[in-house]
Image (cartoon, rainbow, N blue to C red; front, side, top):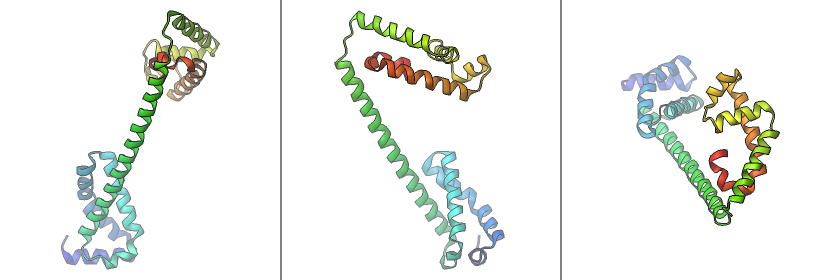
Length: 194
């Protein structure tokens, strides 16, 4: 886009001209998307960023009259949105790492204090059997298919003729009851319940 065309688009867009906005979008969308994907390495996130950028441009259109270099301005906005997203991802990762560390500390503490005698294993089996027996039949069947037969939610859904949401809801019910009743035996049950 030459300087004259750019100046005309800026003037029209600053007055809220939707056609000028459409021209701006069609001219810069792909370029900004490629720029964002280069740094974010994720197509969906890059597309979200570009939608945010154009939303920002439309929101700020009255201020565009002060922009001297439209291309530079758009790339700067895109860069800043990418930086914010990267910062957000880092924060999420940091929290996830802290959560994993806390979980490992809990498991380590439980293992250190755990009595691993055969009596404990027998006790766990009795509690498991009684707990599973107390569950409604469909909830128990879904749990058994998932944990004992290693079936995915989609397979369970197809086999039982129910929705995936129903499978998920029933699994949540089963896990909640089992976690509550078997909490003292957490280290032995991590594979089974998580």
